[in-house]
Length: 335
Length: 99
Image 1 (cartoon, rainbow over the protein chains, first blue to last red):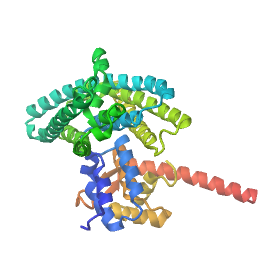
Image 2: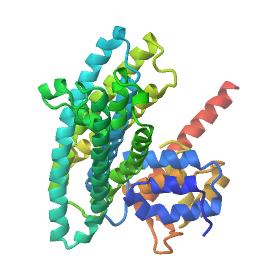
Image 3: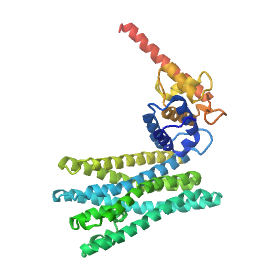
Image 4: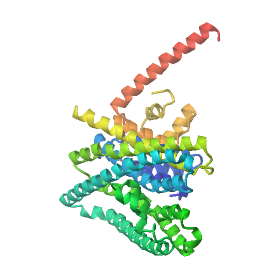
């Protein structure tokens, strides 16, 4: 068969797994026959529609099952996108530091985002734990424990990234402590956040040494930080990209292979409402903040803040729409 | 469904017998002048299969033919009748109005 261009192969790979199983070969064959000119937008639109409104006939899982599986996948991908987008958000909002005249706006909205994030992180951690237990039990009882392998890759990579982070943080601590003994503490956890309940931004900060590093530039100039350390941080941040891809993809692959019982799927889908609400609160705050910043200052000349907010808004909207459709499917089948 | 809705066009293409994806796009382009891309075509096929209006026939995975079901025939008939009524009414009004 004719080899398709990379962008087309990438788009075909973005279709939901169940759609790819059913129509993937036919689509590739049609593209080979018709050619790929002018099909990029058509395929991209098809991908979005297939995720938001999955519709499959023929043999395979029932419609509500597909609907709920799709929602869990969509919410998970949106969450992963928000997690890594959150790192960018934190950097864009706080670096360079917002002038004092805008600190209240940033402070209030940041608190909303951070609190929503804190609650969401807790809920999603609980959900992931419950889902993990359910999936492992289901895989063992149906004799397909081998299907859990993709999760191994996810956890192995995540752990290696965390270890690398700790090494970087330790080096940074050593470097900073030498310069600013009073304020430099491991992982950027200074006195004030430790005195309050754990907040989401602590997670963000600990996950992103570069953010914390540049925030401290008020007290510690770049020249005092070893250049090779900045390079190491840069490499670490770049390595987060594959982690985001693997993190978004692998659990979905497992969910596809290990089919949960209808009851388990239903419980998880209902519970997915919590992260969806969290995402929406964060998106609304981010967009509002961006609009306010955009109209009152020139702090966002490259438009990066706007892009981050729009990205968060789109992914949150997709998750919310998908969730609403699943709720409708679930209530329709129980009536 | 609208007249140039991909689902209607696909049902219309299958009215003359089973076809696979490529044959459907050729037929649709010939009849209506609309060229359906692979994303739109298979999105609509998935939806029609879900509604039970078409079904896949045994064949090569790469070129699987589809045919209308009884429900699909009824739906197409109803849709075409509706379109015919709208078209003849509109054309009659245009002729009477001299537009």
